[in-house]
Each structure stands twice: as structure tokens, then as C-alpha cells.
Length: 369
Ligand code: ADP
Ligand code: MG
Image 1 (spheres, rainbow, N blue to C red):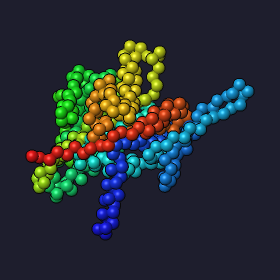
Image 2 (cartoon, protein in one colour; image 1 turned 90 degrees about the vertical axis):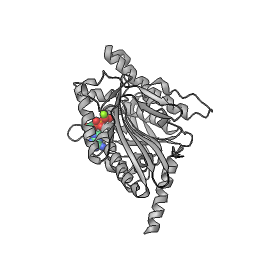
Image 3 (cartoon, rainbow, N blue to C red; image 1 turned 180 degrees about the vertical axis):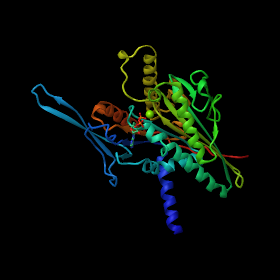
Image 4 (tube, rainbow, N blue to C red; image 1 turned 60 degrees about the vertical axis):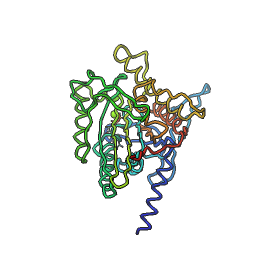
């Protein structure tokens, strides 16, 4: 039995090693909502037990001058494709090692990218989604590591980037949109702090439920249409893990960032006015800036300039993107024919991210003097 455990442990270790230095991209296709949605797009995805990593989307019909109707088939490959029958539990299983590596001192970033209605929030923040599961698993693992002398401090914060401003989703609701948070970088230690942000000691799994409830209440107080606001802002759950080992004197600092991005739908400038136009421009800017940063990180040029400062989101995540970190992006796919064009645009963006190779991740463990 011991040998099996050892083999399993090594296999998992190798999987984590493999994640280093790469941006992984997983694709998830959500199911049609029963009773409400009836017009599916033609999307082929692998069966649950298949090894295939390809999703194939049939493009819109095109009519030639001679009247012939053709459709293009667009195959896209990623590191993993989850079909509509996949559950949050199964998705989490695939990323649990990555999440756990934050306890070993890595900076980890997981994004959900996709248009509004594609399943980002379901994947991240549902009661059985990534945020609660990640906290639960990290808590359990930290408890297990106590035996080996480790003591961890687990501090969670939850912020929103809306119109290029940072808001505290765990603060007082009346402060939202008024009290602006600022990002401070310690360039020597490569650490980020957010001024005045509320942090919650996540010293038990039930705390995370309270936290998510508070964040979602704050958002709904701030906007009459809470869904609309959340589709037009990014939310970032940040879990800082500082561990000290009383036996070996080791110290480890890792961060887990779980990011629910603003809806990626192309927002036509021409139709937007006033406040809406400003929002639109800010979303377009920050999503394309995220793409630019990833692109620059993958550049073969030495000392290539990485434009972190061009948006609040990339500036906030500066030390969790590239270099010392591990990044995973979920590209979320809606099954609807009406969303076909956006689906193809999202998959193209994700393919570009998938083709990026970044320098090797290093563990941020510091040994006490
Ligand atoms: P987004 O955050 O990308 O705008 P949501 O996560 O809110 O999208 O998903 C849109 C709708 O689809 C919600 O009603 C959500 O509950 C449902 N949904 C999304 N993904 C799934 C899934 N994998 N299984 C069942 N329902 C889902
Ligand atoms: Mg959402």
C-alpha cells in the first residue's frame, strides 16, 4: 500500500512540475439550461472518458455567390476539455494539485474567461465551486501539515475591479465605489499589498460561505442589477498563505488568485454612451491588456517589457503572472447558437494563450536565518 501511495505521490508531483512555466488552458462547455434554452450550437466535445483535448465548433453558414451553403469547422485544442455533463467536483479534481501548490510557496492564478452567461461564476463561486473547494482543500492540507511542524496563516480577501477602480467586496456596502483601494508593490520582496482591504482569517471551511455571501450581498446592494454589474467587472479572490515550520525553520509564502473576469463579449463602442461607454472601454482595455501581458511573457526576447501597468488587473496580479507563478485559464463556452460568434472569438483568444510558453516557475520559499 505504501508503494502505491508513493507512486501516486510522485505522479502528482510530476503533474505539478509539468505545470511550471506554462500557461495551461482548460475549456469548459456548459449545458443548455433545461426548459429555458432550446437552440444549441453545433459543438463537439470529448466524452467524459475520452483522452481527446479537442473541442470542435461549427461556424455560421456562409452562402457563396453561386448560392452554395458552407460551414467552417473550427477545431481547438487545449490541455483539457470538459463537456456539458461535467460537474464542479470533477473540474476541481483536475486543478486541486495546482491549488495546493500555493501552500508550497507558489503564486497561483486561475482565470475564468468567457462571455456573459458562459458559466464563469458557476465555476468559481457556486456553493460547490472553485473558491469554496480550494479553501476547504487548503485548510485540510494545512491541518495535515501541522504534524510536520507547519503552521499556516490563511488570509482571504475579495475585491472587484470595476471601471479601473478596486473595490473591497468584503467591506461595508456603502463604501463600495467610494473607498478606493490602492495597489502597493514591494519590488524587492516581489509582494503586493492592497491598502485598506478587508482580510478574513479563513480558519475553517464555514468561513468561506459567509465570505461569499457578504461579497455577493455587497454587489447587489451596489447595483440594482447585480448580474449586470458582475458581468462588467472582474472579481478576484486572493488567498495569502504564509507558513512557518517550527521544526526546520523554513518559511513559505504563496498566493492563490481566483479570477472571475468581466464578460468578454465584444462591446460595440458605437452603441454605448456615457457611463456605459466608459465601462465598455475599460473592459475592452483590461481584457486586451491581459492578453498583451501573457503575450509579452511568452516573448523570446530577453528582458521584454511586460505591460503590467496598463491595467489595474494586470498590475494587481503582477507577481502572480509569469516568473514565479503558475497560471491556468479556463475558457468558458456557452452551448447556444446565439452565442456562436462570441464562442469562436473566445476560443481564438484562449488558443493564443495556450500557445504561450513562459519561463520556469520558482518556488518562493525563504529559509529563516
Ligand atoms: P457567467 O458568470 O459566465 O456570466 P454563469 O456562471 O452565471 O455565467 O452561468 C449562466 C447560467 O448558467 C447560470 O444560471 C448558471 O447557474 C448556469 N450554469 C453555468 N454553468 C453550468 C453548469 N456547468 N451546469 C449547470 N448550470 C450551469
Ligand atoms: Mg458571472
